[in-house]
Length: 240
Image 1 (tube, rainbow, N blue to C red):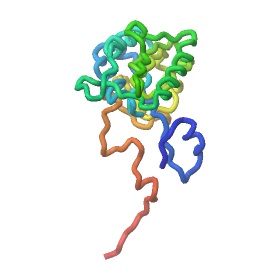
Image 2 (image 1 turned 120 degrees about the vertical axis):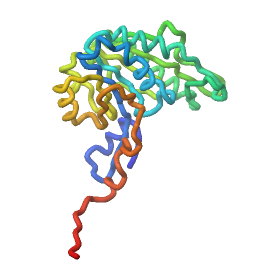
Image 3 (image 1 turned 90 degrees about the horizontal axis):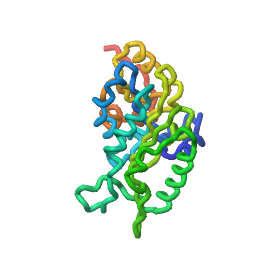
Image 4 (image 1 turned 180 degrees about the horizontal axis):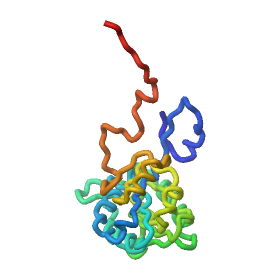
């Protein structure tokens, strides 16, 4: 069992002896039946993006909706955009440092390439610089990007800090467009769409309703049960 980047996972694709776990690309999908009430779910979305400094594969890296996407992105940016890079001993610190400064600067360079694409907007630009370099470390402050289409490259990106793309996409196209998703929270009560989501093979853990992506039931480990990987099920009966 290994954990690594998308490139690492690709090396072991199709190898039954290796259970590979890469980036989570966890997402929140907002159904057409509730999207007009998106403000009711704002705090849940913020928690999903920013908890634990946004470093986990269970943190939300994409929020998808058919409309109101710019308003959603603006509201999330207003919540997490002002977050400052504070020393780790500060009780108000919410961001983790990159102890290898090159990791932060390299990530920032990749994001700048993402931002150069037409149809992508940085909704946190007005809240000050995102890259903060200190003497021995560096920080990346939270970023919220808006993508006007699922074809934008940033719609399939994930980074190791509070980073989320709010993607405009028709509901009927979401499941086929989101790609592999470790945790998918679907905000909907539409029984037909719930059936489609239940049958989707590209969502590993499905939450129906307002469940933050970072809220896990540890009786259901997101990487699967180790015994299921190492052993096989076998029926066994004994006549008395």
